[in-house]
Length: 388
Image (cartoon, rainbow, N blue to C red; front, side, top):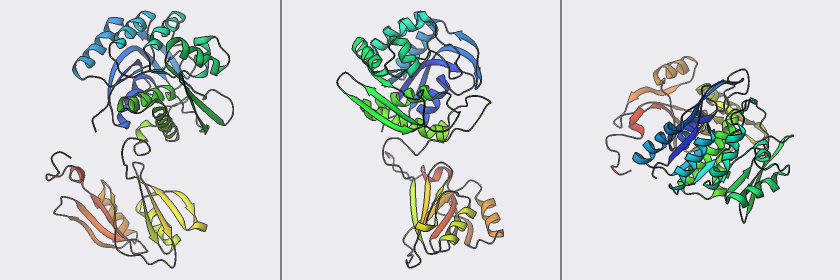
């Protein structure tokens, strides 16, 4: 599976929540290679924007030429544009690339600061002409069209610019949210519940970058939007709660929830005694996220996002057919700490011929558990298949 090359053309956010910084985090976490053309430098944090400096158009274009000419590009995401002159020249440049273009017409920051004057907004039309999809929020959509009805506004843009439009419902009131993808001959909608958080800085940038990644991967519009929405929702759930205002998302914690191909992110073992099993795995260091004693079921989360479950049945016979491995960088210290707390180990950390160090123990139902550290040897041992 080749690496998707995504070019993000946007402004820099010194607070790391939106703009180029959000684009890079999103594209990287999805497995792509992020390239950038910075259009403006902003001084901002979670509370607002205090200064904006537009990058000269020739420097923006030079950045595009430098990366496209050498590395190539599979998709483009456009965010904040520094000036109308820059917007027009970017549109002309992208016309010749023949790759998917996602345009997020940034006009104001989450804090309310203005990031595009009227002349720049007027030039957005040329960027929409070369875009595959445009992703305005509701205030931006109304400002682009002077239409109060969002569907009528989207249809106007689709008809005028021959691009798809994603109507984002995040600015609507209430707990229920609806997004709609409007194409020339089709409409797809998604419903969901609002996630209760003030850490929403960079949601639009993150969504547009994720859509660009999936389009660059070769997925269709509806599929790309659906997967990008999931990435944003998971990043909202994982928001670290930084700053005093609208904080950044937690893109760095979204690893196994969405992506291409098979992902091993959930394992379930059988147990006999629910309370003992839960206490054991909590003592190992797993975070319990589901506790259902009535169903004799518990789910835990590991560092990195994979989940691990126990399903208990007092009558079930547990057979030794599978070993569960939990990797930890503090192997020796963790094993010593657990042993002192009363958890018995069949053997402590030992070097193995396959270049891992591992300690062996059993859970209360007899399942074989290994705590180990492999480093590079897990995925890149000397005997790795050459063309894997």
